[in-house]
Length: 398
Image (cartoon, rainbow, N blue to C red):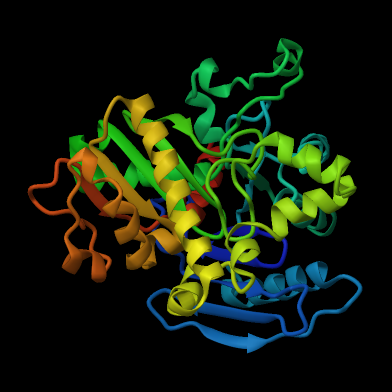
């Protein structure tokens, strides 16, 4: 059995996969069992879990005020042991957002690797420290259990140097300041799934929109990353739920010099108070904003800017690709929000893209018309399966 942990600042997703006899068999795409603990830092944390093919069961859980994250991990560990029912656990795979320039492939984590990864916390403060906290706890409590770090940055190691470089003094490049790219486990899975569903069409000029609370685009050629919107940090590129996306650095200087915000205050504003939430003043979730749009100019502005920034970035990546053959929507918003997809596609008619409204309304795998010059698809992502697959291969020496 293989356990996958995907740790964020206020939630932990978990999934348990059956690895086959001896841990070397084919890995099912869906976990035997999984779920998440949400609202870890809130007054009402909840745990939901489900076996494969079954509806999720949710319940309130009690987490101590002093160390709620550790308490959440302890609850997950207890539930995992119950689910294992005596079967051996061969490894725990962790989604780790940042591997820096050093880690371009999954790695088994020991104290030395953990120390390296802590150095990347400033580059991904919403996710990196929490994944590493889970790793550290397990290193202490279960030192013999293999742990594998799977990096969101790794998929983008195919980027050409011209895509990685920042227009700063060359010494910055030598120190490791560069565009890394993120959401790599998602894009890696989609590279597999799109080839299966669309065949050779997926190997051409493909653009994937990973639209969730965090969001990015990835331009692929031959199913490899050639350009992406997130860069040095997970703040770059698209406007997101609470993150600003691409921003004139002069605005940051202004906030600090003229408005006298501290470094910590600016960081909190850019990561937690911007994006859809910051402009609407109501929510970071388009599902909650769309019904309120007609009566709120701020909600209208938030959604309009959200879509406009997607269109601007799509235009830039289409230019890098030299055209577009396949546009793919994925992740929570991309997979489930037909209205956002429709608004984005409405701005891409110049590419010869034509949306099928009926197919879009039911989140069909193909939502473009037969006449469309660009194929438009909806494809669910599966980061947990990719992480479990990497752990299985690493343990097998593959």
